Amino acid sequence: MTTTLPQTGSQPVVTRFPWGGMIVLATAVFLSVTAEMIPTGLLPEMSSSLGVSESQTGLLISFFAFAVVLTSVPLTFLFRRVPRHRLVIGVLVVIATSSIVGGLAPSFEVLAGARVLGGMAHGVFWGVVGAYSAHLVPKEQIGRAVAITTGGGTLAFVLGVPLATTVGHAFGWRTPFLGIGALALVGAVFIWLLLPRVDHRKHLPVSTSTAAIRAQRRKGPLDPTIPVVALICILVAVVMIGNYAFYTYIAPFLIGEMGVPEGQVGLLLLVYGVAGAIGVLTAGAAFGRRPATGLLVALGVTGASVLALALFAANPVIAIAAFFVWGVAFGVIPTLLPTQLMREASPAIRDTSSAFYSTAFNAGIGLGALVGGFFLDALGLTSLPWIYLIGLVLGIALLAVTPALTRRAQRS
Image (cartoon, rainbow, N blue to C red; front, top):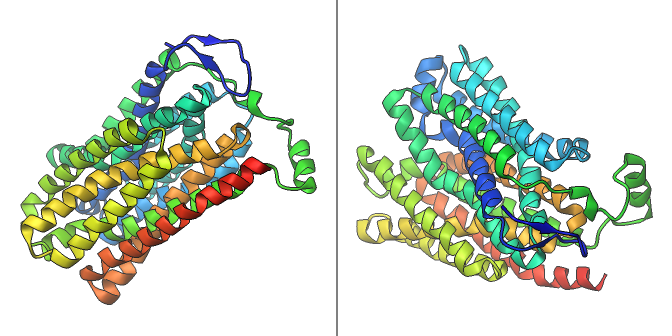
């Protein structure tokens, strides 16, 4: 565990990198995101068991995501005085409880309520966890710290969901819900034992009382880094809308456009997961200190691979290779985006920035599925890669504006 020396400024002075704390945080992120996305691969089984349509079952993803969107910022503000260590443990216990209740739910309505509860806890969790890792290390190590922590979320998308789907197919859809709930409780214990405490309020230049915050708001902007933080949040929303407009319907695309046999879809998704794991490792090792450069490269490579899928879906060699490259590049993107956010946000607004980032990310998931469904009905499967490409081009344009806002914040 890291030895923390007396404070000499706004950042802690550490003698070595807090690997134990980062690993348990990354594991907690992995469990939380996997809990969010479990229904993705189990819609037919859940629909049949609960006696509702597949489209209605798909709303379980939307319930969770929009609970995050609507509650993450106000709940993060509400709990601003609670010590971060205690808060992380508490929300992980709530996520575990919602997963266990979901696994035992006798009806769709009970499961939907459990998903809303889990989404509220997930939003608070994401409002804290990115800033927590940044508080643990000096500024020059923020890139590595945030990349490791948020890499758990990327691994959840590319590995956790396929594994949960496999378990659900083998033992029933309730099993992965109960398993994630039990693992989240174990994770809370390890966080209590291994995660170093931080005093997040030592970075705040003013009182955190509501009256003081309102008084400062009347005087003008709270922080000069707010514009660049807002830009990054818009960037993540745009990119995730494009990604989930396509990826939400990737199974029909693999079967209908690439000619993949239905029985091999799971194998290809696992290949995509392995590719994503490679991307996560690449993000931390190669771009931890240069997240903006890594994002530019990853967005460009993702665009090239999705373009290849759009043009050569009928060619199995090119299409599968492009699908693998897409997995690697996407593993980089959601790992480096919060890294860039924590580097740009001042210590005083990191918690709030993380909450808005979580809101933008989950809004992208929910809106992406809706956008993809609209264009799927209107123009067919072949339109979805092009929607993603539009989102990537807009993301690159927003990323190009970031340095100018950063320089303005530094002058302020």
